[in-house]
Length: 637
Image 1 (cartoon, rainbow, N blue to C red):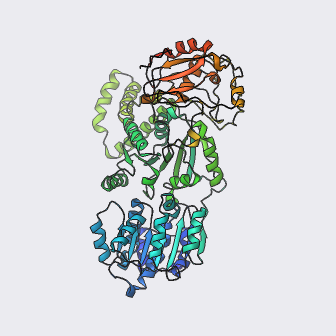
Image 2 (cartoon, helix red, strand yellow):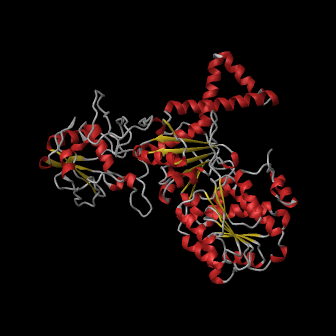
């Protein structure tokens, strides 16, 4: 027998609002949390984002406030404080409390940074019984004496793991110290994950909490998971082209694309606008007014894509958000869980897409192991796949037009044109020409990126032993590529060897993340040599002869000058790939690499230098023809 909201003990006012909102059956977290919260017990809840956590604590607390009217309404003394990590989540939780408690007449005040301070003080003085706030803004009000937490009957920490990740641990401690002792208040802590730091907070600030663990939805045998998880293995230089193709095939209602930094958000948003999408950026560098404008457009369904950082996107809950895209693999499984939790909420289906570089296979495997869920590895759609999908969209639109025209006679005015042309030409040719015009109007001419060859990776491969090389009789322009750091093996097509794209990602703090650091001996330099430190074992391995190149000998090295440097986004990996692919030499023969602002210097065996110079003169680097010569000390572009 299914349990209803009435069975959980909620009053008629709340039940009436839930019915009006279309709520029929409580979710597992709502069922489990209702009884202990209504009884005033502390609660420690773990449930994935999008499982109904907000209603799980909002409904019982509203019910408790409604039975304690005599203690409510004191200016600046709220009865319930809900702490959340972001402004967006504060607004959403506040809206939820207001909707659920509309029939109870309970005043709710959201308090967060970026909003006018005087307006918040006014709301508190009017006697708000529920305050939804970010930790930093609560401390501001405490210091100014505009809020008094001594009358709190309940404190809720929502998305507690996110607040700790954002550096709010000290703020939370100060706020909880200003609240009544844990023996005199009710405390509820909700989190998608429960790392040791969360357990520490629970031990210090919760009193004998009821523990509620709601496992993530798992698909029944033969069924499809609510969030379909797919990863595409794409070299960094081709990520934007690959993302465009994937989006063309998926046709999302609204997609949220995650990037790591503000700069990358702005760059990717600009590139996607160039592909014809309606795109909005969202990151912490924007003012509150700008963020509100973006969210209003997203909720009004007037944008196709939101490109955001993790911090800016926390708390976003948009009903028609159908796809989440990780432009880069998240650095931790917890971050992945929070990202994909933006879609597939409240029982709806969603899609999570990850663009993984070949060297990021360990990050993907770690996410699978931690979440106990399989991430399907798919191949990037080809230009033919994209064209076929666009034709399908055109066909569907035409079918709808034909059906509508048959019902309302909207096609009658065009029949004379068709009859006239059919008298001169084959009716099939006339129809095909009309479809062509309709298709071009609907789908456009497409992007030039649609024709770019993207290396195909069909699955993860076992990391190859160091020093293991493959060789076959492939035509010039293709080499057997050893996966960097032992990952994938794929065929690299000849062409623009370092196509334009976002630069390599940086981990928090400005340093490259471990998975993305270039090999140590290929160090960037500011025009000065940065020699690599080699162990005897490494030097001995590099001295081994390899196919397609001279034997490595540090005494037989010469330097070549390449007129492309950091200003063009050159990286050591770009130069190594260009030399190995175009000149067909063993990359192990390459010595030190120096990258200055306007040029690069590469050490090569004397026997290979002329071959490399000749090969690179006919190639393009970062979309440009560049000067390539033996280094003569004249370091000018």
